[in-house]
Amino acid sequence: MKLDALETFMDVAFEEARRAAAVGEVPVGAVVIDAHQGTVIARAHNLVRTNADPTAHAEILALREAAQEYRRPRLVNCDLFVTLEPCIMCAQAIALARIRRLVFAAYDPKAGGVEHGARVFEQPNCNHRPEVIGGVRETAASDLLKAFFENIR
Amino acid sequence: MKLDALETFMDVAFEEARRAAAVGEVPVGAVVIDAHQGTVIARAHNLVRTNADPTAHAEILALREAAQEYRRPRLVNCDLFVTLEPCIMCAQAIALARIRRLVFAAYDPKAGGVEHGARVFEQPNCNHRPEVIGGVRETAASDLLKAFFENIR
Image (cartoon, rainbow over all chains, first blue to last red; front, side):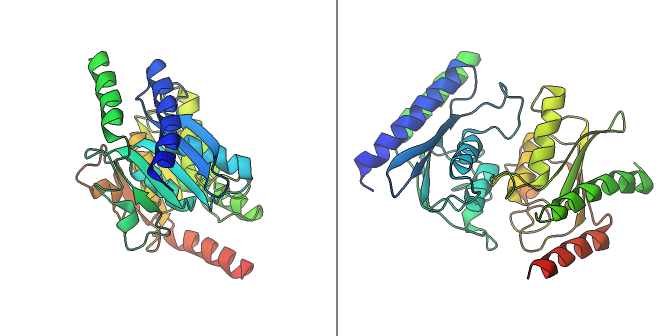
């Protein structure tokens, strides 16, 4: 996939992130695409407070919606785009769903579980390792998060 | 909490695990209790295939149901009982939900994320560390899982 295609799908994830911010949620957005068709299958944003659900991160909601769409729990040949490095929970959900490729924007040194902390896909017992591309539109994602946290302080 | 109280709540988790086996799902059951009231708030079993949802582990479903019950994403003063050591995804969901105490039955050297693999609660950047009690009714849980996997082979 060329960089401009990556950025096009990441733009959809950004639209979702801005929807999260608009309802007072931490601005993270995620998109699942069918890598063969090149089409968006599911899109979601963080809704932890709105849904009163500790698991309602953008990635989990997008994975669940995509699995509903295909009526199967494994999303082979699907890629996930997300505006922030996934946490440990979401990284393992990505592995369980057999996502082919993970593309994320901002790195998260504090709570990230892909390039930081537990580095879920590097664990010896990891059941599935997606291809990982980090840093696509990194600055824009960091700016969105910074603006959100400055606003609520 | 005394051992017999632990075992009483674990019995409820076992009932759920048997319900999972009855519908052809890997037999894992989970229960969330209000530790102050000593009452069951939510109970669930693994439904990954049935729900076509890669995240539908017993723990995730029980946490989501309990959060709905309280109408808030953080389950302070709640304990989670589960028949198998949680995987990485579920362990981090437990941390995100601020569960007070985790009690599990069988250890899972292959896919466990609490006492094995990523050891989520021991990560330096872990946001919340529940008290952990492992091995309550361990043999019964192992037997249930073994019988299930022998049956499907």
